[in-house]
Length: 339
Image 1 (spheres, rainbow, N blue to C red):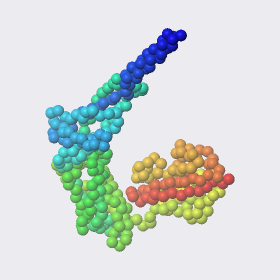
Image 2 (cartoon, rainbow, N blue to C red; image 1 turned 45 degrees about the vertical axis):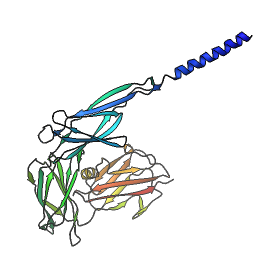
Image 3 (cartoon, helix red, strand yellow; image 1 turned 90 degrees about the vertical axis):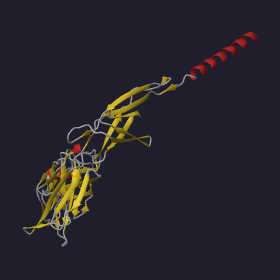
């Protein structure tokens, strides 16, 4: 009996030793490392640039390197994730690029760990700050064309990677304005913002698009601002029982109708609101797929595909414009359907 007891003790100790030995073999998640490499180019002539500073951030810490014409640049040891790389050089526009080191599709753990590398190629384009632009702004005041002083003129770069994207100046006493040291990109918006003169008269803004040429100052056609006689506003909707007073008995089978004091342009509204739905309705689980929106003169109609839900509050949001740029209104109203 004593011998059997000793055997049981020895067997138990052996099992514990085996478990301990197995647990010493560390298991780790697969480690993914990425590196980003490429060359930096002059966007105006496609020449490789030298001495470009490359900056990024890892785990809250800043790091940098230099891109050369001979070897380009290389960023090492990036874990899976998104990284923002910023490229800068004297007399060039600063640009930024998002790069993604993929997440490995391996799930689980492996003994001893493992490494896997990904290569991401990026070839940024930078633009020399050698372009210029100039012009003149007028206003049409009771059929008289008069130079505008103090109007804000804005150049918007149509490239989200360039920093900064917006440049502004104002017109002088004779309506002239000028920009220098702009990035020589192929496409920019030039806008004159809505303007109010010293007499309190308001004028619509306007805009056009142009290309900028390295080493040249482009003279563009004059802008003429038209006077705003009556600001755009919502004058009626069938969800009101009185101006600005919402009903709580809206018929669930009816369309929602908005009436404005001026004609509404669907195309301009979509462009200026930067949305396919400058007029939309929410509530009761409604999505933009559940209704259609039509524009006719000064009326906008929301036509649901099915009846609205009873005893439910809905909100209509609108960001609409007339045919003249910047003559717009953005607001909302709510109503409740009948029980």
